[in-house]
Image 1: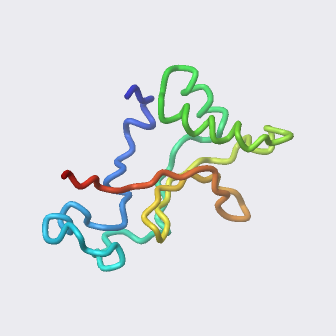
Image 2: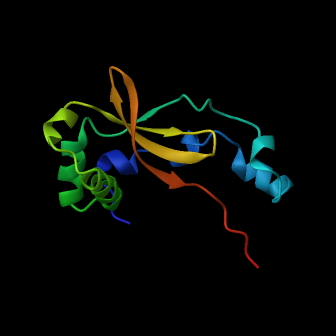
Amino acid sequence: MMLCSICSGIDICASLPISAHESFEINPHQPAENFEHSQASEDKVRHHDDIFKVRDSADGGCELCAIIFTAFEGRKVEDEEIARGLPLVFTVNENNKLIVSFESSEGLIELCGFDLYVHRGE
C-alpha cells in the first residue's frame, strides 16, 4: 500500500486502546471488554491539516488518504470550504473502531471508521 509521509508516520498500533498482541497470545477468545487498556480512547493522533491536504495526498498516490477523501466525497457536502482548516485526527472508539474525524471548535465530527480485528485462522 502506497502511503504519503503523514500516513506512513502514523503508528496505528500505538493508537489502539488495548494491548491486543498480549491479550490474544494469552486468550484469543477473550471478550474485548476484558482487554487491558494501554491508551485512553479520547487520545487523538493528528493526521493532515485539512481535507484538502488529504485530497492532495490522495492525488499523489496515498491509498489511505484516497479512502478518507472518498468518504468525504460520499458526504455530499454542499460547500466543501466549510472543511478548510479543520484538521483530521484518528481516535479509537469504545468498540475498538479506528475513527477519522474533523477536529472543530465544537468537537469531533466523524468522517469514517475502520474496523480493527484479528482474523483467526482455521
